Amino acid sequence: MKTIAFVDYENIWTGLFEQGYELTPEILMESIQLYAKRNHYVLSAIYLYANFDREEFWRTQTSFEKTHVYTRHVYGKSNFASTGLRRNAADVELILEAQEILLTRTTTFDVFLLLTGDGDFLPLVRKIRAWGKEVKVIGVDGSIHHELQPFSDSEDFFSELLTQERPREYKAEKDLEQGILILAQLQSSMAYVASTKARTALSEHLGATTSQVKDLIRHALKEGILFEQEYADSGLKIGKTKIYLLNLDHSMVQAVLGSAIEEIRKRYEKLGVL
Image (cartoon, rainbow, N blue to C red; front, side, top):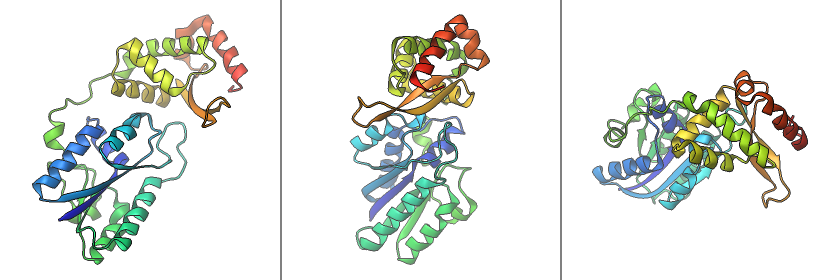
């Protein structure tokens, strides 16, 4: 049967993360392909929705695109710097696109796979079924809304591949002080610390993986040690970039940097970010 998949990536990623696993694009794609093969589905297209500005999803959009997944960057609330923007934005985009495909390409697909556990998708499930199509909801066990349970087909979906991966063991706290020093050194030698430059430097100097750097930055943002914001730079084609700023009023930053904090403060004043 001809099949199309819609992935609420943040929902699936968060559900697994809370159980101690970090879902990678590779594991997700292998899981979908394995599921399709076992059920004799011909998987024609995969649409995936996420806010790729999130630290956790750094570089994942490229990974998905290389495997012919149609990605949709949905700017939403899911970051520590801006927590009140476009609530459920990915849900809305996914529902609208799925309905458009359902109505305009009705005979193209027999089965719709919805990778999510969010109860907001129940109206979409009902709409697809009303058009005589089969719907399979695939979520993370323990994180699937009760109204989606009758349509759920999640048993062992990720378990086979996830058991090959060890749960997260990295402790961001142990690298915080060194991370602060690395970012301060960058700030002392550069006009501003772009997010990509910061992540690369942290990875190189700490000997940390991409996943570990994401954990470290996410923890620093959550604890208020680090801020992120957009910075206008006329020298860039896009005109702006995301930068990181140390919170110079945070007790840990003050303890680590000591008197050097004043030099950083002057640079922030010159940037106009204080």
